[in-house]
Image (cartoon, rainbow, N blue to C red; front, side, top):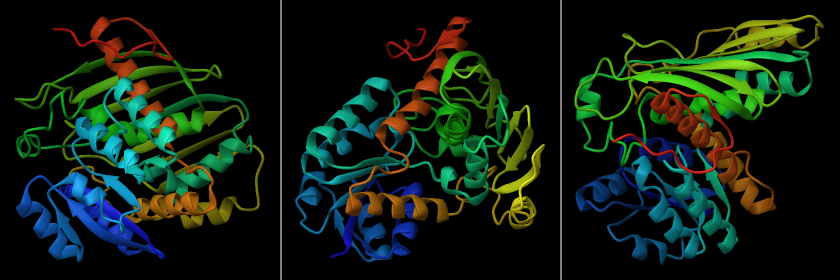
Length: 356
């Protein structure tokens, strides 16, 4: 029997989930749910699945085995808890949630129900990033010294005005860091290891009628002693490709989107030439630098493939709930530092309180 996927929330990101599911062997999109009937019906007609406006009715559908949560960021917890209680495996679009408390409730509910949980971070599944991770794990960089990541994107005022939840603390959970740069926050942690300390400055400079930051710079100290930065913005016209740079005593590598710009190590490897040749060409998309719709669904497909495998084999998914929580914690530490003007140590003991 194929795994039956259901999608909660029928907005833009749900289209990427649907496209990814359509390419998965042994999987089928069987249902979608939106509180707005017109949205659910339109999505269902396009993708050939059942339409629901009631979450409980959708969860009662015996064909549904996996539920993908594609609601606004600050509305992930409620459907995730309901899905876990119904015995469904849970996929949550990034971020897992916008506070640690809400993340923990999702993680605890899935563990209590004995269902699998994953957080969507498709950048981990890109070929260049996979090779970069292998190089880190095999010690090719020597001692890691510096890890930097940059998300210098552009979002128009119309983007923020297009949805009442965009740019709000309540449902977006933050701005350039929580919504856009979180993929690279996850990547830099994945490559460099746990973050021990953060010092950050954020601002809102290019957009009106938003509560959150559209630019920020964070300095990091990692638990292994290395340092680094995370730069995030939605105010850099016309929008640049995202980039990650890893440096150590025996090597340096730079990945822009899914293209390797630099791959240089003191100790050469016979695969180096083929890696540079394979990932040295221009990428197929703009990576969402200016248009959030201009991303590929291939990363989603590879991650959902991994998730289905984890369910069927009993293994852990590559990005489970606790992995997904890490990026939220780092970003919340960045926000706390920017609000207080002080360095912030991790792990956080509690969710930071926004200034009045």
